[in-house]
Length: 408
Image 1 (tube, rainbow, N blue to C red):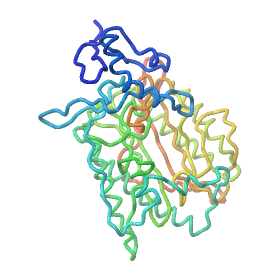
Image 2 (cartoon, one colour):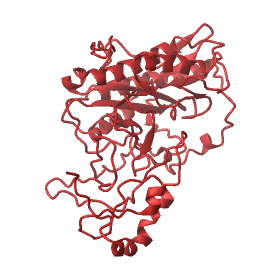
Image 3 (tube, helix red, strand yellow):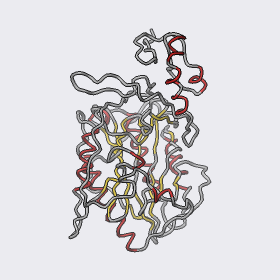
Image 4 (cartoon, rainbow, N blue to C red):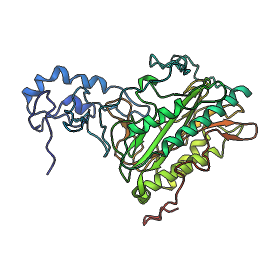
């Protein structure tokens, strides 16, 4: 039997009937059920606001399906935890667990990017989108330093990944690691670049299972069998670094052939793309090898998200597509710094947003993985500035042989 639905009427405790909002249906929004025509009319003034928030589209044209964020469940009396979007139609098993912890504070001595107070990256918005910076020797050395620190922070945070902890705890670990990165005689500290970037509330992104990217650390407990992407970005000495990896949570995740297939294929896609980086390589060439290898393992590439330039700004030009048949212009030149960060999924390469306007999830709830490095184009090839160390947590594991022909 189908599960019973709750009426969307404010303060209405009735079960919903078959009546749905016709405007929501036209917009492709699901589960907008009411118990009666009278209840629907009574709540129209408030309910219609969700139609306005549903007008925005992602890059590939998917509606950002939203449900009015003021509708929340009551906090659990024992724990104080709650789901802030109880009427939202989630695509997979992951749920937000609130309340979020307060935004973490920083020492006053820390050098901050321009969005640290206002939440608005003003410098980034003034950039000419076709102008690609070429770093001199001083800038390149600054990038080496900040990327080395970013690798340290990622490894410290990843070492804490295990069943039973929360992603909010990982945010705390990351935040502390950033402000403990004392370098040289000046003892300058590192700022976690995501913090308040376009009002993002945390110091890193944590994206489990079907979350494509930009998951907000909260009170959800990691389970044995989850996979989890940690996306670390830091600001130090006037330059940014960006690195992420997907990790297995517990032994059950490593024993799941599909999880291993999407994680290891994504890891290999990044490695194969990096092999192409050298002066003269077209920026659109990386997507060809990424998509070809993804398809060979029955995975799909999310085309909405791409790599980007990175230097004194967080996301300057160029845009780096991860899919084939792109017409993006540009070639690699010595002194360029940018990221390659493919996202692969086991299902359809389409996404929707949670009502927090950050968490991006697969439309079918299938699992997804991502890996990222910050790269410097040299005279002869590439320097992987955020390269793994010998003792870095995680790392590749063999892909189990499966009955459908996908194998290591």
